[in-house]
Image: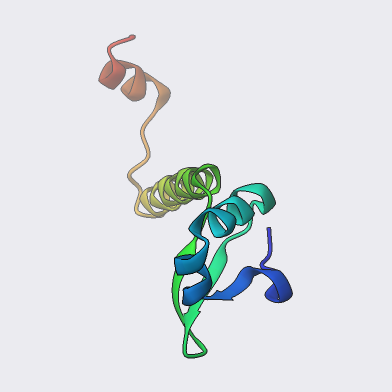
Amino acid sequence: MPIKFSEDIIPLTDLKVNPGKVVNHAKNTHRPILLTSRGRGVAVVQGLDEYEKGEEEREFMKAVATGLMEIREGKELTLDEVRKKLGIA
């Protein structure tokens, strides 16, 4: 979900004053929160579910990209070769 600049950018001092409010906001909105110090971004707070989902998506995309590169390099396997590798031939 895209960041809402009016709601999701807060000063680091707000996190220090009321961390539960900031964490709950990230969890409930499913959006990351950008923490700032002196007007500059310094960190991001994100709900655990959204973080894990993003990590899974990144890993999947890496695997797809690796597979596509292997195909371009001629490293594909036949179905019989895959079965043998997996021990299900």
